[in-house]
Picture 1: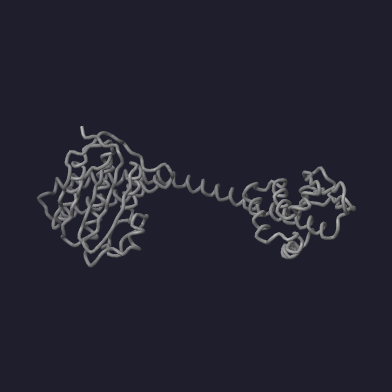
Picture 2 (picture 1 turned 120 degrees about the horizontal axis):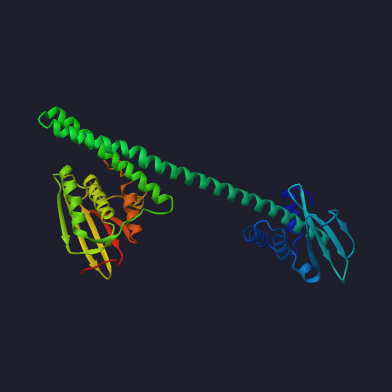
Length: 369
């Protein structure tokens, strides 16, 4: 009864009346994951797996803790044995045979093995349950910390950055005739905008990972002005690239215009950073079979993107091996994916010698009227 686990296992192999080790383990696994640490269910499963002949011939009863004396007794046709868990008495098991031959040494060994397995299963199941509760509590603490950080980042960082940008833009206007001052303040505005983008990306990532997803403000929207706006913004910092917007210009749908503008801006910025320097970038809009598709294509620098990199393109904090230094946090494509998912769509990437293409597919919320 109280032998080390290794000894119990050795005895069980010789005392299971021909049952295989896999059958024993299967019964144990069923009891662990199907019944938590309900000893009654655990014992029933194990008795069925280990001793089918005894189950057919005998009546087996489990007395809950506190109701039995806990003193093992064995007679010719009746056995009462203790069922322990750790150092605690969890109950007693009574096996009775109304007729037939008396219990022999093999019968007694088999029942003891059953009880030993039930005790081990109960201990393991209880430990797993405690670990589950501990992990759940840790998860809740982490989620609360993320919510707190969301508030801190959203207010305590964005507000000062907004004040810096407003003040710097005022200074630009006042000192536009002094090139040295104007240039310094312009760079301050640029850095503040870059920091604002990073803060917004961190906020979006936190919202996405908290389970609620990125919030959307849907309205009836034309697609082409959103992409044209993103192209115009990027063309100021990438004047050597040639942008071509092709396809159906009157496509409309019920989307979040700011978020789709963000998607377009991220994909175009990615094409500039990773594509052929100064090369052409094409954006194609189309509609087919109830879906709207946006593709962004750029020529490659030294060759296609390796498949291993493509597989992780949309993971957070991921920056391509050919990305220039001094870039962002590597959250842009991850947020693109989350925004598209929030719209019920999908985004994929493929790369070949002819170039790299990102494809955004939005579901039927399209209105051509």
